[in-house]
Length: 278
Picture (cartoon, rainbow, N blue to C red):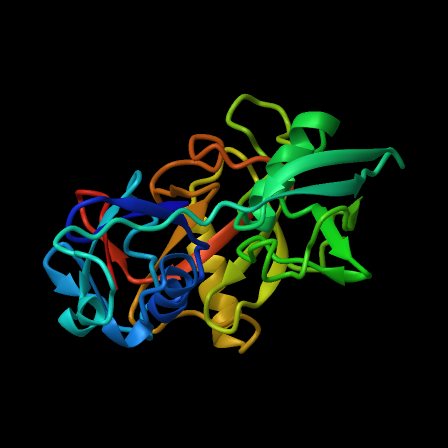
């Protein structure tokens, strides 16, 4: 997702990951804009964002804007008039050689500040491969994470990236959620999904019926939590799939859950206005 920042005059945006902390976002601003972390204050909806907080409050919003306050000492050391802050461009183009799952070598023009997720999107455009957790990119045998920037991964001009498809995990013997009826007298084909908790970032495979309500998943996870098989936030939680908020009183089909999707468990609660508190 993209976050838009509003300093004194000209706004700018930075792509961030779901699990980034506010401190990591400040470090990214320092790298791109040269503003030290110690001189940054990020404010959202009138509240100062703590360094150890996550951005899960913002992920439900489309293109959220964050106010960036810069300490006055930063402008004292600048050699030019800084009545209005204008970020310097930091675009560095490079060509990346991608070895696709079909063993073809394709060359993509990227920006060094693009994320690995952006690289995956470009690969999908040329190769028609799925954009979910099954797509894996590696550099010298090391798997790269979606929220990393190409420059941070030490990807340089004409680096060779290996692309492969991770097979869907074989589900462990966990009881399926709900019954097998699809409400029409037939048998509903179950969906294999991954459930990921922010508490320890543990993932488990599960099977769900498309016609069942998401609330059934909550019941099953609570049972697993009582047996110490899956961590859950004690103060409450909600579900996200494909960057969309899931509603407990609607079916997995209505929430547009598809085969192989990942359902993420976020700490907090959801109000009637679809905004989360954390």
